[in-house]
Image: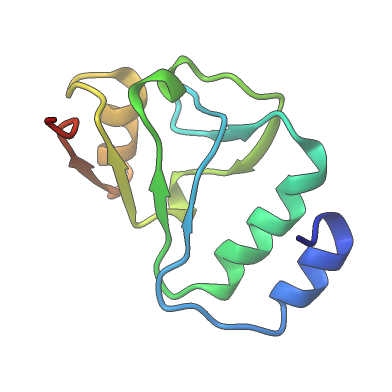
Length: 108
């Protein structure tokens, strides 16, 4: 697995219709955050390589943890989450034009 500047450089060579990514947190203002500084440049390169960008985050990510900003809502097209509607970050995402797609937990 590549990380840091090597991953970032390699991602500049590809194109993705829909990159899917995760994050450590989404803040109330819809800022997407991470705690692993070395991974942020690669995630930004993924965003730049894609036509549309999907963020996959569960309800625990809306606490907004993370110390480095990956991107803002303007860089996202879809957020897939199990978070309840009305979460401040979810509302901010929708207001920015991001499609927030709710999913239910799998039943066993």
